[in-house]
Length: 108
Image (cartoon, rainbow, N blue to C red; front, side, top):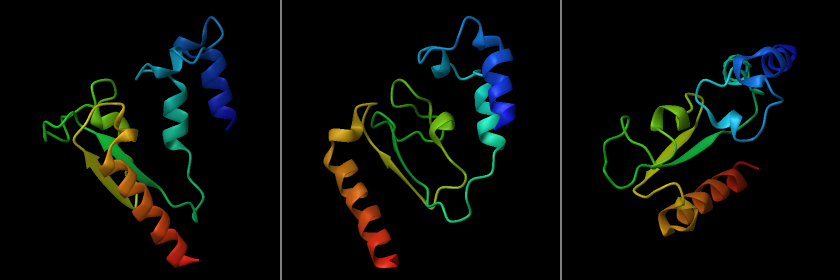
């Protein structure tokens, strides 16, 4: 995590003090440290990603975030929802969240 602190303070995007808008840039140096950091072994990761309905993953985008930036290699599951960045209100997204929660309840 000290590497992340260094990236945040010394990175190209870290001057002036980093803002939430600056951290949205794909070249934000802090992402290198985050991506290199190991996750807890018991952490369960799932992804729900929009693709604007074009069905062209992995070249897709939700209109704001490209698939390559959303995809997590460690995810136990990945659901592509044919909708834009605001996919959180879509029935497919809600059903996937329910599925994930039920899965984890069964594992308890």
